[in-house]
Length: 171
Image (cartoon, rainbow, N blue to C red):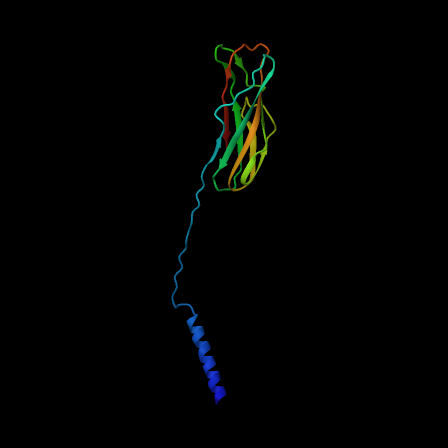
């Protein structure tokens, strides 16, 4: 009899544990949604650069440090950074130095985040010139690079200070 009582108690205890862990008779599910919004892609560059002083017929060069693309779109789309250089206009004369023939050479970008960023071949920025391309993008990223800009000064250039606008853009 003792064996039957022990078995009965064991079965009763097991039934109590199973009853305590069963799900309620009624349940309701709620779908929870989180929306992640993407930001913008933008570019920043130094406000001014200074070229070397040269005689007519020599190239003038400048280093542009700290061009930064910030991609806060939280996506997977790549981007392309471009530059365009306008003609240089003299301050005291009506003389110009054409942008055609200038060379923009982008350095290797330092990337934070997940993206493969590669510089394009050096080229003439008198027309829109792609200078960096980002591929294999996942989420937000930034890319920072320096560049060298070289401008051939014509042999008939007048003595003056010449100014031009170098425009950086990103698409």
